[in-house]
Length: 76
Image (cartoon, rainbow, N blue to C red; front, side):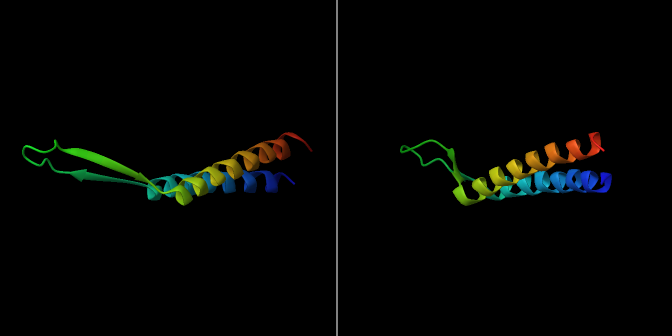
């Protein structure tokens, strides 16, 4: 059954990589140029809630898989 422990740890690693990808897909930054005599240059950030939520779910699943994978490796 140690095989399942290693498989869970590998799956957890893939879930963390997927969470980073989802987070990066959910954050968009836009730079706005200065308008003379009206406003200075600034940048705005848009956060997509669905991508951020998917990243949080992936991290939660990775945490559970890590805990269970370590348990399987430490017990017989």
